[in-house]
Image (tube, rainbow, N blue to C red):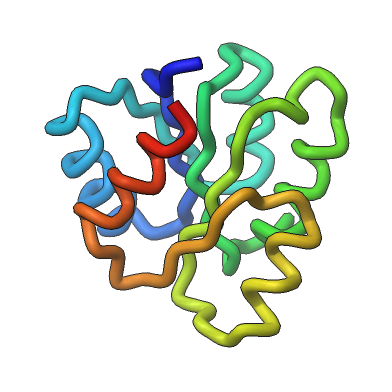
Length: 121
């Protein structure tokens, strides 16, 4: 399945703007959410092909949200890439155990991110 529609979840408007710009220039359709609750609403409105998930957010964090999404049979086939400043190996392992399929550390290398996304397509 080719990746066309990406849901970008991050509480930083700066990060949302930067990543949206990078991805739209590569031909992806990007929708954004600034919280876990908003992300869940967006997923229900339109199932994305892939989710880029920040970890540190108010309310539901990215680890919890990833677990919720990947354990729901309706959305379990949507790959989640953690996209976070948490760069410890234990964070990466924990993210993968929650159901993430990949893990990218901020600041994001745009070429590396696009390559990782295209690998799912």
